Image (tube, rainbow, N blue to C red; front, side, top):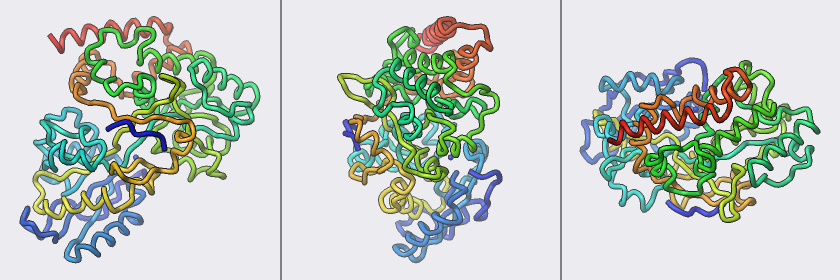
Length: 425
């Protein structure tokens, strides 16, 4: 793995356990016993791997019963349930909670940033006023999943170092193979939000988010947002993506990249395990850094995935806390899923062997000004992590909206500057 410079399933809800916090324990009494309910988005694992985890935990704490509630539409359903006290004892903090100041209303504090930061990565991502409210279940790096065999058939055997080199590589794939050079997953939409996570790769700067909060023109030429969105626009405008973006399908795309029908997709490193599982030969699936180098090196921000938190209304907080600690430190979930361990001294995932070979340098982004960025983004009605933002960019690139790239960027800069002035006045 490269250097660490610093510091999603089935169609129906799988109800594994009865809802509610019907624990037999009576709260924070120091005893690790009783029943806890754990909410998870991993409906594909609640009847298999998670049951094994519960058995392993029970071997340490024989008087404990851990039951799981798998929820398909996790963020939306849990967000609704959080208007009541009935949202399990342990749950993945929904991504819909974008205001960190809301965390104390729903979750039990786990410790200070300085204390937990000695052992764990990603502790600032769900923290407020120096208190941490969630521990990551796994972590991700960011880049492009690709089919090594297809890229090699096109004569490209080294990671492109510039956006121009990347476009040339996609042109070679289009000319010399039958593969779609880059698959946007436009119709499903959410995969397009993954492009925003490339900001660390382009900037190589832990302050990239804080700087955006103070920037009046993030889409000016040479800046991080301009580089990311220009690459996506140019890929589509040069007809290096799928012919009909309205018919893309995420589930099918997993096997399409494995069989070489698709050459490249922008996805977090969480995807590598899934793509390899869907491929006839898992070794054909590799991972490329974003094609920008700073000081002669590739970079990638790393970030935590969902964070396990404790329902502030739980009647069995001691056992809930013991589960969270055990899951982060002993379950080996992150490694099994091909992710980056939440432990600073955790094992390195073999899924990122390509990043290691390319000398990718990792770092965590400082999130101190994320709340400001979110307020500006909301006021500007851009949606940096909303699929409609980059679907609009793809529409412009394919000539469906009548807007040029400069039209799009000028509009984004204007809206951002006006919203920033309103939010920070």
